[in-house]
Image (cartoon, rainbow, N blue to C red; front, side):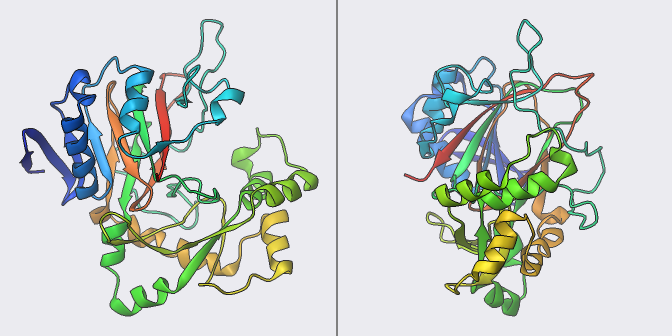
Length: 330
């Protein structure tokens, strides 16, 4: 991509205007307000994808402080999980272990995407697993900050799709149809779906009581399928997650019997195909990038303007350790 100077910060773009990469920021500078302000602006300008390289040795404090430049840190999960950096709302992901050989990371190892392999969604395999994070929360995360402590020599890349430009590229008539729709997202549906899924066979099955309780504690949410970004004003395709179970006209009532099928049996409504049907479009080469991690890379992504997908690596041969914070809108 072409180099751009913004008040002294040099950056280049990954694909058209999507994804800004900065290689010249030190750990000290990362903590300076004028630099972090500029990085936040650059992030918004680049479609919600920012990469800062060369930050080897970033501390948990530095990661949390930088994350707070983008929004409010989501905390509370770390008290109950060995997958978190002790005392911090930082989740460890990968396959790193402690001195006793115990896994200290959450490992979700998917199919590896080889060099030159298509990143386009395949409806047969439902891969790559293009999604938006945690849309079943009452306040879905604005984005995540993902930091690489150790990278596999091959595999383990993260894929990003510019769902803003993908929406803008649709015919006007299609845009108008989609703009009147909402996605129904449910924690209970995600749990029920995991019960049925071979990929999640290692997880304990949730009982009917647990599903009913999840539904009571965290009722299904509805979000616009076309989300207008509160900062840039641009519209993007939104709301694809394992918890997404139906697409409905905005503000329409949800029938109780169908909700039972979606939330307690993990069935997807036929209408979800409206959203799934957009996945091959938004994951075309002109809208996607594949980020190959190196130690010290830090990536900030905006859930409101892009989808992402993880890819696998050979966990017997390689070690991967990533630190992730989750950020909410203030």
